[in-house]
Image 1 (cartoon, rainbow, N blue to C red):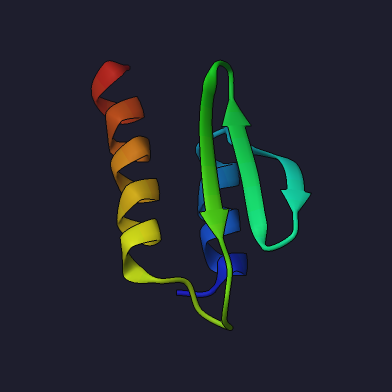
Image 2 (tube, rainbow, N blue to C red; image 1 turned 180 degrees about the horizontal axis):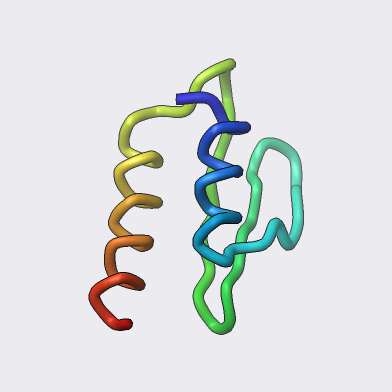
Length: 62
């Protein structure tokens, strides 16, 4: 998955890009924080799974 695709998905769930430091893109939604490092054209699967898990938690809490 490309960062642009994950960015669109996160924004649909209410996350906003807070900061970019080097290769790390920092997102936040309220008090929740999420950091996604990008070291190549596509994201590593572990970071995509982490983002999806955080979004799933939001759905479960709602």
